[in-house]
Length: 302
Image 1 (cartoon, helix red, strand yellow):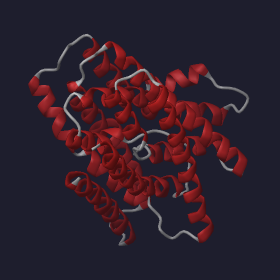
Image 2 (image 1 turned 120 degrees about the vertical axis):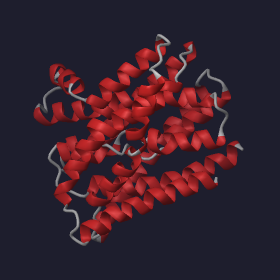
Image 3 (image 1 turned 45 degrees about the horizontal axis):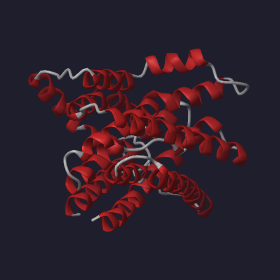
């Protein structure tokens, strides 16, 4: 518990650092695009390569992989529907509500409180999650933004192909499936950059964060977060009670669903042309709520 709380406090402090630096004029909000480029093209791919070296493929783990993808698609639909209903940009609404921050938030929790074997099912859920988080959700959002009448499969594929994190994750999972490991020298090298990923991602969130929100905006943030939590609660109920999986795996699926919104969601919202601080504010709020959920789950599973 101490490790999880300490890490969460660290996240909050780095977000606060980014916010204070922006307020004091050390960094401009426009500079967030530089940090997002570093995260998406350097530190996140390196973190993916380093973390997936622990993957060992087993037959039943195809189900957690599929569920990671499915959970994203359901959240995409919920976010798209809410934005349409509220008269806002549907593409941004889809993007800011979806995805799970497992690599930089949930994995340390699992490593601290569950046996080492538990890591595999979480990584496989994250593999399906990564398919959407690292390109899939953005591809859907971008395609729907350009063509409201239908989804362009060609545009979807092109956006996935251009996503460096997605290509790296796909390569890493394929290597694990064929039991091909990277040389220790390469793993050690990418770990250096990968370890910087949580710091840069949280610093970027702080730069994008805007605490000057009125009561209506604050209510909307709580509405969006409640909508996401309600969707994940329903998914968790179905996953835990009805899936033919070992109890430990079902518990870990609940932990994955309790994860914060993907840290790259505000990056892609920015890429879609969003000038609002709502994606970053929602992301930061989800981190605090997820910490409470993690502690609650630990109480029941311990």
